[in-house]
Image (cartoon, rainbow, N blue to C red; front, side, top):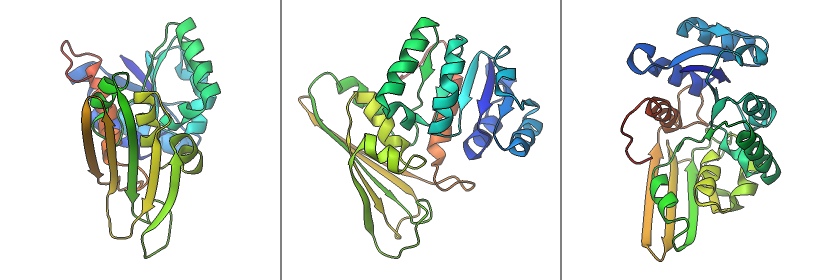
Amino acid sequence: MKVGIIGCGAIANIITGSIAPENNGIEIAYFFDKDVERAENLASLAGGVAVLNFDDMLNDVDLVLECASPDSVKKYAPIILKKGIDMITMSIGAFMDKDFYNEVLKIARENNAKIHLPSGAVVGLDGIKAVAKFGLKEINLVTRKSPRSLGKNIDIEEVLFEGKASEAVKQFPLNINVAATISMACNRDIDVKIIVDPKVDRNVHEITAKGDFGEFKTTTMNFPCEANPKTSMLAALSAIRLLKSFNETISVGM
């Protein structure tokens, strides 16, 4: 499987460094970024090609991996899907825009293309998906991050946001993809609280779900990426796992 990447920052670097074609048949071949030098640097490390024109990769890839931003998803996803090319999207917050979601869903179906959304920086999505239509009555997310990861300079704990996921991703488009991921998994606009906490050095996500099935709670305490503290290391690892699963004969927990 030949892959092209949009966005050559921290996540793309981790993914590229962890995928070996000889082990799993995945070749990350093309790199595109609005910062051309960044694309060229990563392409050089990976033995791939940096493209100046995004369209140049589309005639030679089986899948496009987006690691850039919600705006990039909205700009490039329709182009990719119209070509019948599958994609993996890291900036899942883009799909909280219902009009855009319906647009790309229609395009993907018409062109026999698939959109894959990794589990990202949280655990427990398999359970959420399992109970989503079987008596799930309440689900919420509390995210706790350091001032550095949220671009704040404060020395006391502060609630930055409390409301629905759809609004959270508008106010924090590069910080709260997890809210969109959970919302997509259970097909509802979940309740979200975002706390900036100078006492933590990890990105902490606590999910609580209740319903006819019972109750479960997960807490994920992620180390942030060194190159980009807004991003959790687990987000990149989930994309690596998803990529490798495409060539597995037996898949567990998908």
